[in-house]
Amino acid sequence: MIYLDIDGVLILENEDDAAKLSERGEHVAWIANQLSMPIVISSQRRISWDVLQIIEAAGLLQHTIDHPELWRTPLRVENMDDDLSIRGQEIEAHRRAMGIGPHLIIDDSPVLAAQTHLAIDPAIGLVSADRDRALALFDSSVRTVS
Image 1 (spheres, rainbow, N blue to C red):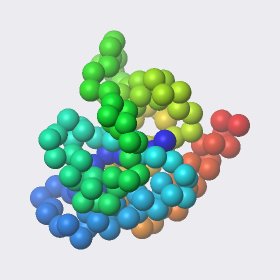
Image 2 (tube, rainbow, N blue to C red):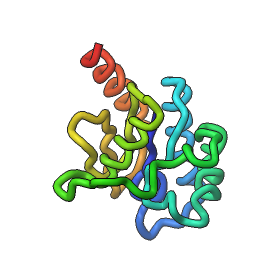
Image 3 (cartoon, helix red, strand yellow):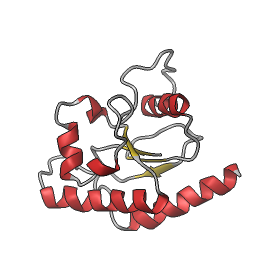
Image 4 (spheres, rainbow, N blue to C red):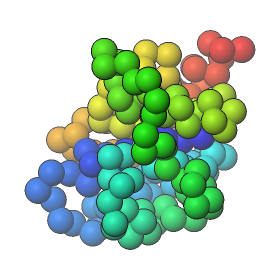
């Protein structure tokens, strides 16, 4: 499973460039295809009215889980630990609910230490070099677990 953030990964602050959104979306699609994994939206934008339009504009709609409740991480998680990453806890709740093992989180924010996290620089967003980094990170995490 790929858990995808939007702001700082696909869309940069003060940027309104459809071509850049599409280009970054192509990088995510390539990673999803290489890992044969669907995408779940873990971004705070998952609660926005336009989130599916953004995902569609990025060319990623066909890569997201096609389920009315499971295409995004939970909107509410019980017993959150204020000392840990909220995003990481939301992802962990989704993983437990779906029985997900191997995963990759593409995000510019911190997650939980045990999660496989491709950290993105929010000043530049996802770039082509992140493709190989994602595969190497995922491969390393799978070997570590095995």
